[in-house]
Image (cartoon, rainbow, N blue to C red; front, side, top):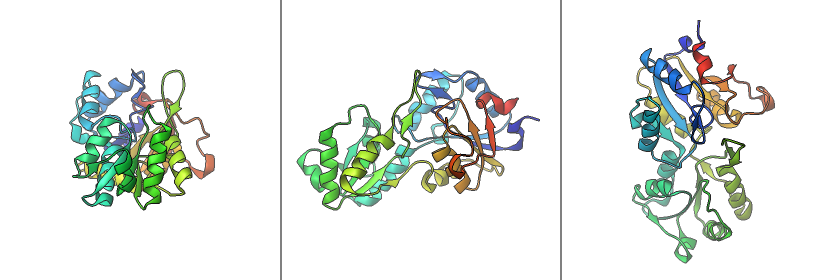
Length: 259
C-alpha cells in the first residue's frame, strides 16, 4: 500500500518539494495530479512570500496541476495580517519583495520608507535580493522607537539549483541582532499558517504535513498534531532525528508517496 493511502488530506510545501528554483522536482507534477484524481484534499503551504497565491496557482497550472488560489497559503499572507494587526491603522516599514508590500498595504496599513519609517508602527522582514545596510539601519531606528517586529519565517536558506541561497532567516538575524528584538513569525513552524491551511482542507481528517525542512515543516507539523513526512529532495541535509526532531516518515521525494 502506498504511503499516500494513509491520508485524505495533505499540506504540501513548495520550494524543495514541488520545485527547486524554476525547475520542477522530477515526478512532482505527476504525483500531484494523481493525488488530486484520487480525491485527496491538498493545500500548499510555503514560507516563500515572493509571490501572491494566484501566481503560485498559475505556476502549478503550467505544470498541469490545477488548483484554486484558495488552496495556497503563504507566510506572506499571514505576516501581512499580523503586521496589519500590529500597525492598527498606522504605518509599516517592509523589508521584502513587492508582493509582500502589496499584501501589507491591503490591510489598510500605510507603507513608509526613509525618515518617516523611523516612526513606523511595525517592521516587516522577509528575504529579498536587494537587502542593504540602509534597510537594516531604518529597521533598527523604527524598532528602537518601539515598532513591532514581524517576519515571514526564520528559514536560513532557500533551495536553488546549484546550491542554497540565503533566506529570510539570514536577513532577520541581522535585524534582530542590531535591534535586540525578537520577531513574531507568520510562517512555519508557527501556528498561524497551519491554522489557516487546515481550515482550507475541507473535511479531511487524516492529514499529513509534507516538507523538506526539519525546523519549519516537521516541527510545525508536529506542533499542529499532524503526521509528518520529510522529503529529501530539498534543503534538509540534517539527520532525520537531529535535535530531537523526528519525522514520522522519510522519503526520497514527493513521488515516493505513491510507491
